[in-house]
Image (tube, rainbow, N blue to C red; front, side, top):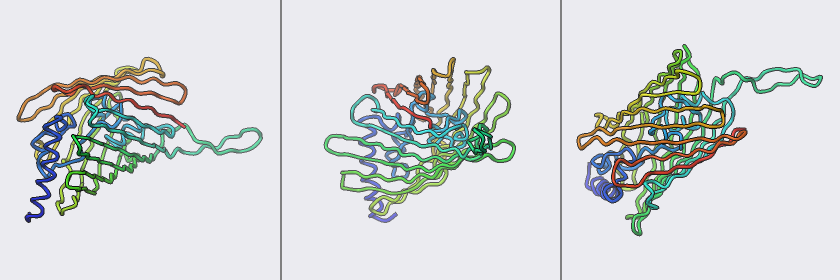
Length: 327
């Protein structure tokens, strides 16, 4: 690495370390401070982009969920039975300094059925499970520290299709953009996420590779990838309305961080859902345990989602609220 690369890396590292140390954003956003300060893992922290994902401990690898799956395991988008638009907002750690918002559109390509209606033949959307689902998403992170500002934006395009043996296969392409007022540097890049899901009776097995392939080009010539995140888990539905998941996330090329978690989602009625999770950080420093919880309320085709999660440290809890509409 030449001198310009080293200087650019140092600038990025100083900014990220400042945010991480001042706000402890690194650990709470699933980046260890040592990784966040390294030019190799600077920027674009992994954030639970929807209230449901936050309530499930940030890992819905085997839980499906249509719009939520676009930001987790894209194979889960095949759960969609109708078009859906979703958005959410969070003030991270209740500090008023770091906010995150997201929006997503899921569009299943449902099979057409021919029906005789009113004396004429009409083609209408069928009720069968879709064979292909397309997803579009936008994620935006903004932080203000003193007079400095840092912004990250991600545009996502996802595709899920059904493969052989009922295996759901998902793919997401993310365009990454960042800009900072510190020395006016910015970045552009991309990331590719892959995912699989396979139902076996009451079980669903899930596997996802977030940042399977990635590259970020900072203004001063520094190139770096995202930290790869391998997610694996299995969910179990003992009876209708309840699904529980055991999962884990491995972060980094050498598995520097491991996050095991358990989560559950209970829907006693179609209009109401409860969620909760426990997640543990395991690294060379310590192993704090975080909790999260949330609920959904549905009226007709509208749904309101809320979730809260602990930071595992001295910071406030993160609150996320969102809404979605099916059409």
